[in-house]
Length: 146
Image (cartoon, rainbow, N blue to C red; front, side, top):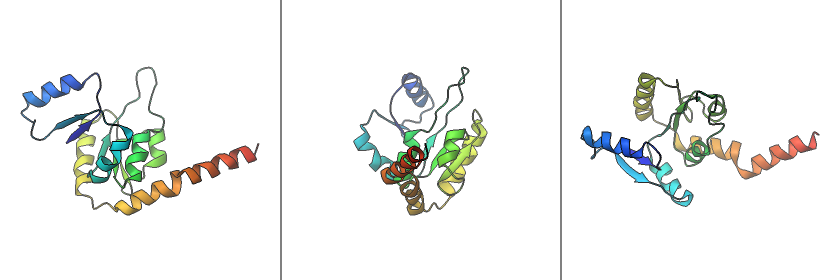
């Protein structure tokens, strides 16, 4: 498991990793520039990005990291939230999980690792739906209809 990035729980996660003697299985990469990320997405078996709706109602709208992973042909495991449903189609380019349900996350990770993903089809989904040309045309259509 590679954990890329950093945050407020980083030290706690590192301590837990050591306590459970998982240092050989979990590697903390730390912060990486956007330029460095594609090679990690392209070589990853799956990208796991669970998220929750906060007590105040805040949530990820449409996480760019999911689109980046998909563009690199990497299947994504993400929480079944509205924005994620727009880009993740179960069994095609990823799997949706119930938020705050560790058993579902576990089951989907195992399923995701066993799945024989069509990485070209995953990358084509991003290209056909989220390339700059496609987005430009969608914006143009909206503005033209006003």
